[in-house]
Length: 289
Image (spheres, rainbow, N blue to C red):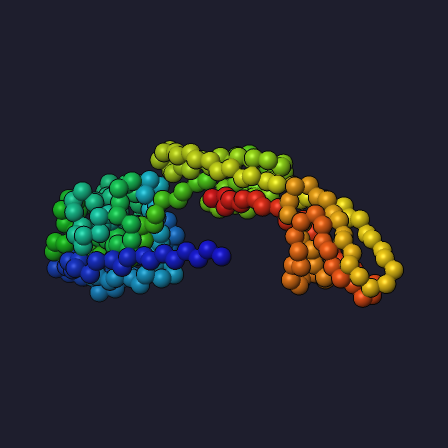
């Protein structure tokens, strides 16, 4: 049994705290009221004091994969808001201007939607996404992830950047219990050498190919035996022939110690006695994958 354990690195803890002159504005409706990103769905949250870090569980967290594109939607309350979103892709605890991933084109009370593509070189592990709102559209820029703004609200979400998947393709498929896993179980259909080819690829289109060969030996037929008889006590010699393997003689049909090896077996008998012979073949095996 193969057991695979993975550890997700925790997010940095040194993020700045965004501030506002008036948290959520005088009316309390300069806010991030509805937010969704991939599987995050955090709606009708109202004002949360100007800044909140949502828990990394349930509908307030998500996992994204480098190279993939995800939908985003953000909406404020009754007061028109402009929005900006950052993701700490390199997990250094800083929302750099280069990590400014979404900006609303104006201030409005309606929802703003778009897409975010996770860069291929994003660091794997947990990190933070920050969304900020502000009344004045001109004040929302890539450089204000930490600045004091006028009226608005900020929310942080702990998200996970997952490792890109690896894809497997085994050929031929005959005799395999799966062609799309790393270590399929093989039951080769033919005796002799059976060769399987594995092609591994990633989401970027990079591929690598390798092969493994299995040498299959047919199950031998039962040995041919010749029984003997004699009158009275004494010695008998039994004979058997096989297909090239080692002939092993035993006193029991299953288990027990080997009494002798070879094509003949000599024994002293005192009554009618049965002996058993089986043929052992040597061979090799290989683990596919």
